Image (cartoon, rainbow, N blue to C red; front, top):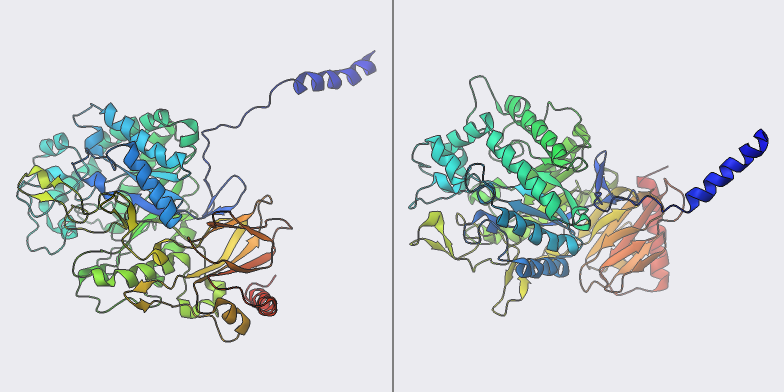
Length: 582
């Protein structure tokens, strides 16, 4: 009998369990997570996040601290971004002043509209990174006749601070207020020594977003950037930028991280920014979390980069050239490795209006070059083993209201700002609307509608994209194929091209590469591939054993003869094997 029971019990259990429904996966679980220094998806593929900030409109009062007038405009913006650039990510700005207009009082209507507008992007497949934005701490530090303005903290907080009348002195750029305006400095200093009010508000905002977004929408939420461009305001006696990061900024992030957990964001990382000036190429202060140790996977190394020399108008003459920003972005990769956390560059770009705007085509190209690879184009083919990981990034910014604003600067009806971004004379938006309400790019589509490896089955070993974008009538081509690969050169034939080299891994899902609109897609690869019906995604087979080095050349050229293609494949195979043996 005992033996018969031992036989029957497993059979009975199997019958009972077979009738039970499987435990469903959490539909709100993050689609993108952190694995070491990489973002990964559910297939274990290495993910690259590319897109824009949405948007500088949040700095303004005209739409109540929201990026859009309503969900219809949000959809117009999202569809334009997808169709014009093939982006997959937005950094979605939040306003403390709008969220908490009175102390301890939340504007639930504002929070509902934030969730509604962010949900539009999530529903269209974008990954969404929320960010609490500020510049110069608050608009309410500035008087009605001031030359400058800010954004961030609410009026009631500033009123309680008793700050001196603001003045930047002799300033030629709004950013000088950060270190020269006593009101900005003191308010910023006070914030870091008493951030309790902000963190209470932030917790309520995160709880509201967690409940206001549907499960499928929240699955597209990457995490939270707690504070834009942090700076001490002033340093205490004996303190410097490095010790301030260690003793003030990092404990703030740890406290914010714990608050995220309590608000239901335990599986989303905090995208933390170091000292604003840690990687400046003019104003520079030591930083980058030098004393934090390994911070992943609950934190992401989140930084900005603007070429201060180029923006200055006097410290860089002429246009950017091949490799100009490569070392700056290599420094970001190095900090990512040291911190054992992914890196993302959540702001970069160059003014599209003003006296340095003629440098924008070359400077922005150099920045995208630095994000794609740590090598200048002239060194890429010969030194490809040092190309490094592809960085994620969101360009500043994507504002469909560019040049069409009606902003009362510091609430002054005699100072209505309409041009550019309508904020401190800036003009960065990559998009605008024409008279018929259709979105168009304000920069060369060849620069912004890029090839990038959005999901790699394994690990990226090297990547380059020669976009051949234009500076006026000049073709900017910085990555020439070498004479030692004549059939590769013939295949490219002076066209745009990309090369991806990766070591296989994952669960068999395909490697996916985003493609520009109208690209002719001459592909030379050592794996099978397909191109989506809309021509915007290349899928490279993920079948086969792990640990194998693969390559793909994707050229915007007419298909050459089968003889040339076969010879180009042989050349690429030998080149890749020599660069990445084993």
